Image 1 (tube, rainbow, N blue to C red):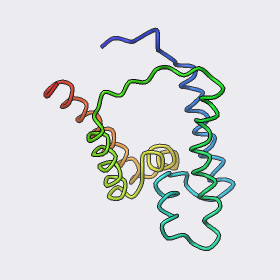
Image 2: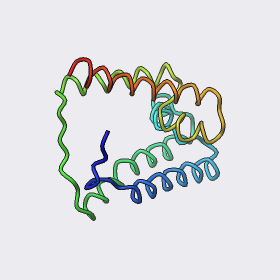
Image 3: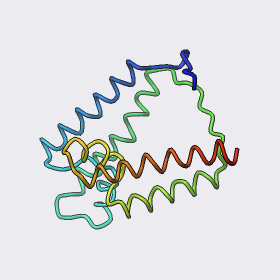
Length: 143
């Protein structure tokens, strides 16, 4: 394994992780809710009274923030080497896994682990193991 030193970004990655942690902390302290994206979006399917505004605002922030960042800073070229069908299948598998796992990587991996939730530890370990196994199979056994 080698490190691509030209694209190695430990400081910006650390800052991004700290901001995610701060945002999740503030969200639970100020709103009393877990900042799990699938739960926020899922709550819009059958919204409780008074739940729609903050959920839509949260999702709008997720959409608007990268657009503002892209307008302010130069972005690297992105190359996606997967087909559209592969991307659709991957998205569906993530969605199904999110429902079966009762949460997503943000809910379990960021918020659940920070609350020392055993269920989130198991879910996060399963997410990571599945990702490792998928990359190994795709890149080393099939590719």
